[in-house]
Every structure is written in structure tokens, then in C-alpha cells.
Length: 100
Image 1 (cartoon, rainbow, N blue to C red):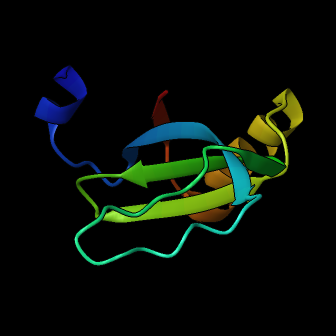
Image 2: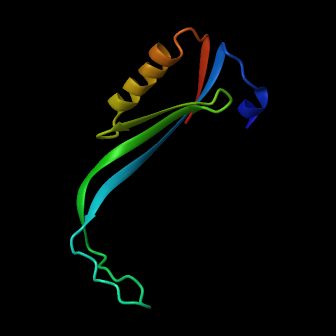
């Protein structure tokens, strides 16, 4: 919380990093047709269609954010994203503080 209180400094960036695993699913059966006055009926069975890792990097005070989707969640993926933050988005910044 102290980082929020410090305010915005262009030469010392506070960058937030958040990630989430997502899975893609599909229904295996078509839902039954709904009769008037009845709730929609369906089956809970699904087919798994794969997974991905969604990453959001943002800097709240500046109103900047970047969203990345990777096929997996590995150290190499994390390293590539951090390299991009340093070399592409903030190359002239003296200090970057990362909140994970």
C-alpha cells in the first residue's frame, strides 16, 4: 500500500503483474428447448478444449496496461514478459518496482 501512496514518478515505475490460468470448454450436448414458464435445462457435462495463461501487466497511475496470453505458465514465459516490460515499455526508466 505504501507504493500507492508515493504517487507517480516517471523515472521510478511501479508495475503490477497478475496472471490467471484459463481453460476453454464446450458443451457436449445441446440444451433442451425451453418451454414457456420453465427455466433453461442443460447438462453439466463438458469437453475440455485446452488451457492458456492470461497475464495482465499494468501501471495504475499512468493508466497503462498490457494483456498477454501464453500457451503455458513457465519461467521462460515469465522472463520473456519481464524482458518486454524492461526493454520495450520502459527502456528509459531508472528503476522498475514490480508488484506480483
